Amino acid sequence: MNFPLIMLILLTVTGGIWLLDYFVLRHNRTKEDDEPWWIEYPKSFFPVILIVFCLRSFLVEPFKIPSGSMIPTLLVGDFILVNKYTYGVRLPVINQKVFDMNKPERGEVMVFRYPDDPSMDYIKRIVGIPGDLITYRNKRLTINGSSVKMKSTGEYTYVESGINHVYSQGYLESMNGNDHTIIINPVAPSIQLSGVRQFPSYENCDYNHSGFTCKVPAGNYFTMGDNRDSSSDSRYWGFVPERNIVGKAFMVWWNFRDLSRIGLPIK
Image (cartoon, one colour):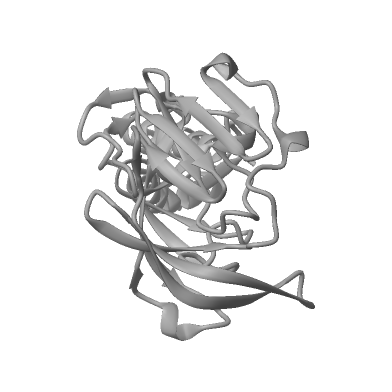
């Protein structure tokens, strides 16, 4: 469902009726005449729709986390807020940038439109910016020849599909001076080669059973999930074009299963 498009259509219809009534129809009514329902209701809804549309399009948009690919940073069922302007102001629906702001940085959690299906929103962590050489071999991430610092935080267990307990190792990973937690399943392979697809600029990458090396092309970003061995990300479907960026995730605002997560900043 293209919610921004639906909101734009509702805004156009209710706003059009409001303008038509203001400039034309109301002059044909007497003081004793009641507003027709088809004028009264759109006029009442128009300001609300306008406020919601502007907030979601240019300031903050809510999202729900549907999968465990970003565990332990984000849990299934988290409702998060995404800053829509920090990476630049974009026109709604067509997602065309009209005003530049900050560039995405390594280590930030970003929401973007899935390159293979732009109607779907994905959320991952940025590990590579344009020009970076990304290497991931034997579960170790290297950026431009420098190994990313990792510190063990012990065993991490979570429940998958309601019944399966997954045992992983937690690590504190540091990028650009900021720390975040990732989990790695020590018995899983570094890369599932059968899941790697042909994608734009695939020739920038070199894959083998121990991992891969990719050169991030201009205007693109490389993303990975914090749940490294249970994430569909740039390793498998390629780079994220700048035009697909939605915004930067910054806070958990609700979780029905765990109220203690409310207000949790996303690092």
